[in-house]
Figure 1 (cartoon, rainbow, N blue to C red):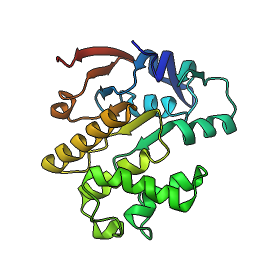
Figure 2: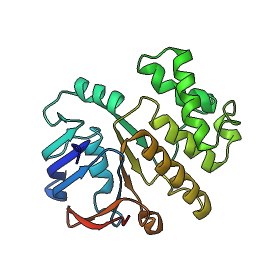
Figure 3: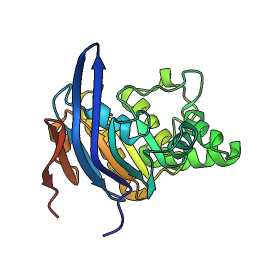
Length: 231
């Protein structure tokens, strides 16, 4: 098997409030491999977002090891962590956070331009990502002119604009109705397969979780493997 894109060992995250210490993550271990969709489930407050924020180098854990695309990240300074996030990690959130004044095309092209591509190259990349998501006819529409499902598909394309190795999604279909949720998940799943990105998706939707390659549950601060998708 290939090397994991995301490797987590002994991840701990404590939150201190006054004299109280709340231990959310208590030694979580996880590997996510290229082209693999891993579902992350657990009740509210179990630490799913804390784990995603640590894996995405947005927050520093209390202790533990995080390796992204072979790079040990725990001792990196903020500038180095930012470079890895820009080049290697894509994020999808429950709310799309699209820029309202930009078209779908330019919302997706913007990260690539920030990453150093020309506007022409970035827009070509955006078209290539939006077309298989069923948005080829919606490129010039602003977010307000798109449905909720279309907006979230634009957010998925934006997360992949810089060709990341790792995709992290926090309840990416949590704000959508069941039918639209299924459509957006399928589009995300198909893109993961096509691009070979490793994906870790936090969700409360157990029906969608059944279609992922693996499912892990956060329980008492550690990760427990629940299932592996059968061929």
